[in-house]
Image (cartoon, rainbow, N blue to C red; front, side):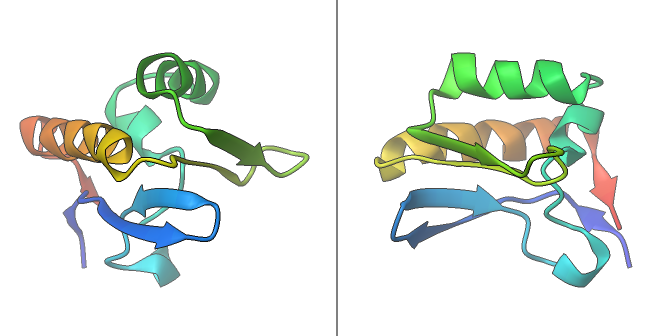
Length: 96
């Protein structure tokens, strides 16, 4: 069943993170989904996140199939989360 992309937030030992948790088994939290929504290449999306939202940590697997980031500040993470949620509503970006 498809749904509107909607990021939620949580805290881990490395900081604040966010993602779409509605249907993890079907890939609702793939890191590259917002890139598709914004019609960016994955590389340009990563650059956009780093330059505009300044995560404190960025990590990835060797082949970049897994990429993630976190913030020490919940408020900074929320700026990113709220922006993606607003864009998902604007574009009516449905996933899964």
